[in-house]
Image 1 (cartoon, helix red, strand yellow):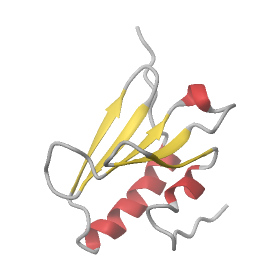
Image 2 (spheres, rainbow, N blue to C red):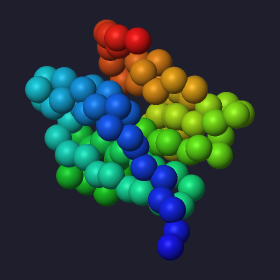
Image 3 (cartoon, rainbow, N blue to C red):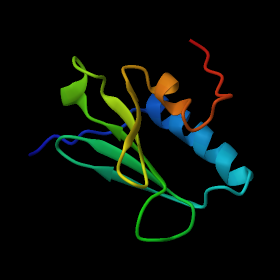
Length: 100
């Protein structure tokens, strides 16, 4: 059996917090979760379309290097990367308040 990378409950709660705010504001409409051997992805869509607007990715192999979390834009560029998911998600929601 192959172990899959996934978001834990705390990570998913942070992502869904930002997602919920943007849905309520009418900016985002849909999402998809993908889990693989090397990474987990939360894709965010403005409309149901072929390409996601943003992808929040977790890649544990990069944990000791640049950081395991990253936000990727629609054009494929990495917008933010780091070790702390909350700080990485601030690129999507600058007013994100996180209790540590």
